[in-house]
Image (tube, rainbow, N blue to C red):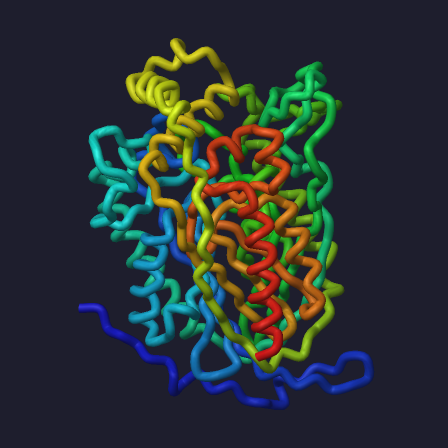
Length: 494
């Protein structure tokens, strides 16, 4: 029997001499407590792997999958921030797990900030009794794989491990001070949407493609670092940076570059524990389409015209670790006397298809489901784009007209983490970071929900994989920016 543990009476923060820090000639009193835990959530072989429009099943393990937890608090109820090595799972499943964690820990569900790193070499997590997204016999590839018997077994295992990890992190809470800094990770993240010389917009158009003209936007190379120095305990480092962890490929389980990042930081800084939250990465990945010198070392050309490789994941982990080291010793310590969490529900219109487009959508989806991709007149990423668009149309043919999703903010003093329930374009992250009520805003993708891409308005006009496959109508990014800034403003005033 699982014991319900209520920490409300043991979470009182105190002003103590040991929590005092001298900074700029003044004494700063910190009321913060912070705790950390890590659990292994590596799945069994044979389980479906999520992340592509092709079937993959786990054949082995390159490195373990983990769930890391940071618990922070200055009052009765701690806020629990969880980072899971997974590609992402739907809001209904996340809500079910967050409720379980809240009940186990005796804290409000709102205080659970559950986020996925977005590794493309991890398994499905899917609430066992979830209804299919649409009626009828034709399931999309996600629904079919999510129904695999090993997925139900793994989901229960992972949910239980996340409950345990949250308890462990709360039990580990000790007096702390929080510091904020930032570094830069150059030449490891690239806008993956390009204008071709003929005016067409393509996602991942291929390494060295001579028809590429220029990228659709600018990457954000900032790496944000929160450092929690604790009394008589390891330092905790929270890292926030936006880039797709789709570097490894294949059918071997791996945490991708975020796993290398965590290990490298902890190796470089003994007595430190590292937790990572991915940022606004919906239109950003690791592919340098114009490589030079040794840029393609340890890489191979994969099925979708993307260069991948385990060694390159190590490289990205090393570079982002370098950014952490740039900031680590020079963080600015903050007065931290207030923590909290707020979750609101936003309502987004769906990207429903035109009736005249449905026959071709059904044809493409049926050919793909039957393994007859060679009869679809596309290859590489263009094939993936056509299949994604077809499945989106079939999914939304009969509605719904709207989707409801959670938007979340965690405050740690004058620092905010904003959780977006899908994959936001980097433009969303840039706009949210401008909020003037906070010393820093850290956007976190796939948090408390995993509902697909949030492209900017111009991406719908241009085309490309993300917008053609998105379940949301044009304007979703701008709406999330408005709602996100509104929520940040309200939390800042509390």
